[in-house]
Length: 168
Image 1 (cartoon, rainbow, N blue to C red):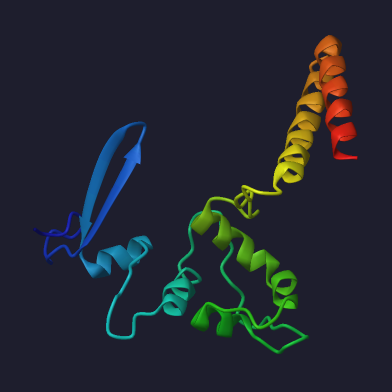
Image 2: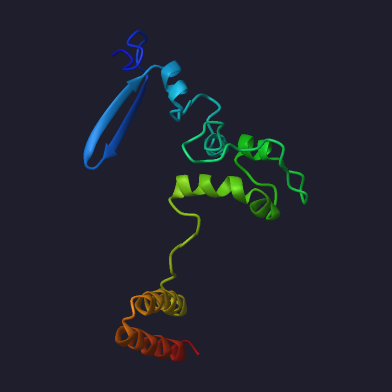
């Protein structure tokens, strides 16, 4: 199969995309894929999880995403952004705040979110569940107030008070 772009070299990068329920496939050679900025995994004998994670910090620029600055480093441990890109590991807890601007878009792209939700333990997780319920209800309360639906807001407020009594 030949490259869809240049129609000269064999296509060895295959990209499938779903848009509005329609699947589109693109078959490119390595050069055309690099020109388009397509993400390419190169798995060889040196494959490891740190290398995989570091590959997400590559120098390609997706639309609207900042290109990573190479000179930044952590004042606490001395880890540089280049080191994070190479190893896929941060040096210390301060690195999260130092490299926040670079990490957030990458974490969102990998995980779909930048906040860990996690699981609730089967035993002893009642308080966590109730706290999450209160947070959700507070958001609903704010939305009801913005929509000027005061009767619904009063009902939500009462439910929040009942749950908070259970928590205390």
